[in-house]
Image (tube, rainbow, N blue to C red; front, side, top):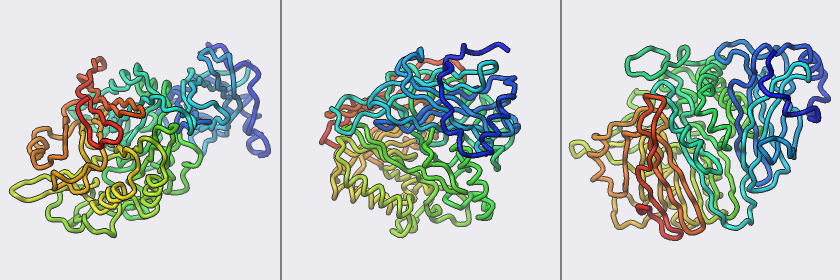
Length: 523
């Protein structure tokens, strides 16, 4: 067998965690006899959820990524190590995790005891001295210590990567950026497709997934993309989901196709497990049945607090459905104003408000999938709203904006995606009043590859929405943010095409927010 690497992990890695359970010990003994007939790290490596003293490193062992055949019948020990240099000579942590068939032989290793605000490299190995394979080196970075100086933080945020709509060229350019981490704001996969159509750039493998095997195949296909793999290998990711990780426009236990609650929760459980299996989440997010704990916060020194929201799992159904499933344009819909309805659920909403109240950070970021600003779509003097986003849950938004006005967290910034377009908006106490105070600034990123929303139709309603400062839906890309104690800069980065593998990138526009002065201005 030709070795991919020359056993860079060495013989010193210890088998930690492979003790105390007879079945696990038997699996290890059996694996010692297993022949590695194929490279097991085809889905790459990743890291995520950085804290000042720890980070998660991830990989998943596969033989044929798009088949239902497991890598092995039992658990497999995976050696790992972390170093302060790319050559993996200055090792600071090492151990062994068990990749189990119950979680598709994925491993999520929480590496503790790291120094704050430092780059590290990591690597995995499977097998023994006579028969082994080694992963590529991944790179990751810890967050600054809580009381550290206000050194600049640089990150990018992205969303909506429909494999069929185009290549992930944006990730190739993102990989060349000087970033501390990446935020992914949902629609990591798309569940539909698999039907050849003339306008598709590439095709999903297989039909729409509804069970665990189907979702695993879909994630594996996405993780095989080389540009996505490279971005994961170079930066820690912080992720949340939207709808397509399960089913378009689902709301809590409600399917847009009116599946029974029991059937849909079974599907949701399969989708949530596959999501956990393929992303660098902490073990606290390991799913239990159809539930997965995803909302959480991150602290980057005294500079930034990020509260990451889950806007799907706990929400009420979309308002004014009129017998239709999922999101739709609704007219004169009073139900969307009902204070009893919530996009976040009462527990998450209380958690969010508490975090904003107690935060001591210089910038307070709310990271979630959507456009938060009101978007009035006036047609024939009739006010229309999209029901699946914040406009469909206007009371939740108003409670949040009222709390910001009353509790005054420093420099609130909302980040979003979902809508396949760039937006820069002022979030106001009263969107109908041009003189209403600006409470927060909002930046929404376009999609990585998913087709944009109609540019002309949206542009036509912008004069009725004076709080919107920028809109563009014809281009794909991401947003690059540079944050200092005094200034927030968002650069809207757009590739020229996703229909071909080669593309250039440019900064379409840049907007800055000065500390203490809510409202974005052209940078």
